[in-house]
Amino acid sequence: MPEVWLFLLAAMTLTLAPGPDNIYVLTRGISQGKKAGLVAALGFSSGLVFHTMLAVLGFAALIKASPTAYALLRYAGAGYLIYLGIRTLLSTSAIHLDGVAKNVKLSRIYWQSVIANMLNPKVTLFFIAFLPQFVNAGAGHIPAQMLLLAGVFILQALAIFSVIACFSGMVGAYFQRKASAATYLNRLAGSAFIALGIRIALPQ
Image 1 (cartoon, rainbow, N blue to C red):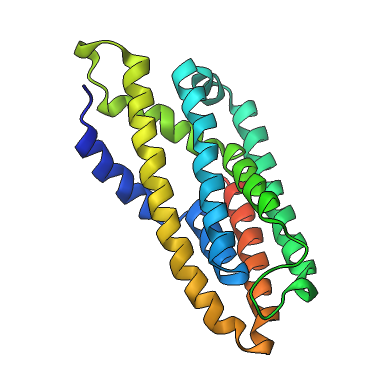
Image 2 (image 1 turned 30 degrees about the horizontal axis):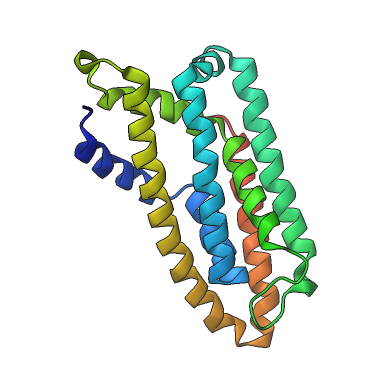
């Protein structure tokens, strides 16, 4: 068996570190309410299943070995986040005082989060570099151990993202009671998405 508890502690520390996923959940919750934040959290957690399968099946190693493939995937993810940011900035007039964006369905928020996570090659490389460190090679069944560890990572990420969503939803609800705050909240969210896209596109 892998070192599950040690892995869980490391995974929680990494999940809590500021990054595109938790900042995206935070901004969604603030701008559109707790429910939107929770849906975004579920979307990002679902996207981790994709990276799990890449790591277990070995495709992540191919991405790591090909600078061109990695660059293309990174730019695609950056472009998608910037696209979401621009759409959010342009949808300022759709925000209402109840904190719900009329033109953004929860299903769209979910799939936006899934795609944003899938297009982040850093998550794929993280999985292929991080998971094997906690695998017990002597116990055999390496793919099964990696699946177990990935499942633990996904569950703890969902839990932490959900807490962030609930907190940001309360903050957003407070500001949404002020009519003038709605526009600024949407601008904040859109600017955050664009900044995250630029950050991903920049070389390390």
